[in-house]
Length: 208
Image (cartoon, rainbow, N blue to C red; front, top):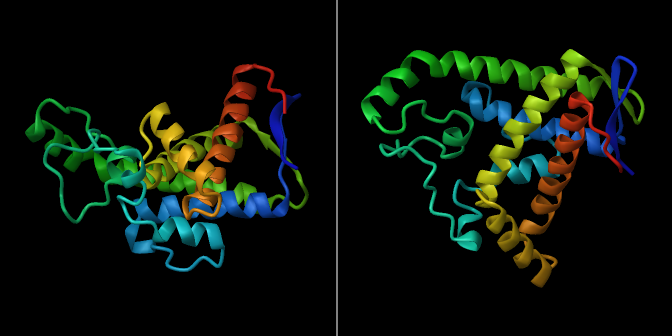
């Protein structure tokens, strides 16, 4: 059973078994693949990572009524909407300025996010036991990577608000074997893990 991140001396320590580490690392790799399409991962061998990769951009919207207000006013039909969550426009009020800013900065931002996701995935895969002990730089990298991965998963599930979370969880509660069930469970797990790591980095105690 997983245990939350806690600070122990100069390290940030959690308990994650091999299956949990593999699921998280697989999701980080899928997020990285979206940011770096040329390195797309078509078949990871991990059932959940492959499930998320196969979910269409609007998979969850039919359950939440999500209308993608967060997307750009000038959407590119070939662009995955999840990129608008990971790489939001800096000037939403002016599409022309936003497009120019995006042209100048997006590739560098993609590269930095991709490198960070690769680092976080490697850290998890390097763990040889359930005890995951990270120095602060690796803990911060993992926190950012978890944030980006939750944004991707939220987009796939059609989640923008707390009411969207309630709507999706309501569907799963009514139909336990619904295709969303596993994805929602992992989304909740990532939320819990991210919160515990953020709290540990900020000096908060987390019980669990």
